[in-house]
Image (cartoon, rainbow, N blue to C red):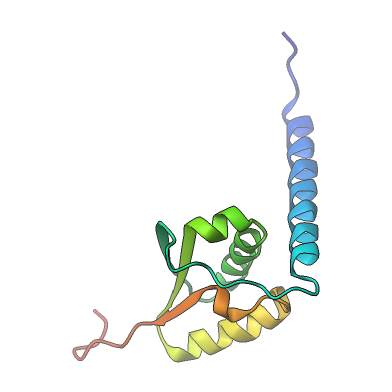
Length: 121
């Protein structure tokens, strides 16, 4: 049995993560280049409601990128990004222009939560 030192495992994990990320990005570019990108089907069997707020926009954008890179994931999963107000929604849309400039916003559904009459407790 061979024992691999922890730094070697961490280095290997970073290499795999970079390779997976590069593969997903290339798949997204190849798939989206010159094609109409289909909207997720309304018959998706799973829905994900994800609360999004600054400073976690980056994480949500990366998730959307990886989800959109996999046609099977898009077919099975509808994404609902939940924002606490319209200001956060607008800010996220501006961030998306940087993180995922070629991704149509119609691929996911924004949900802006109205403030309760009695305020947030």
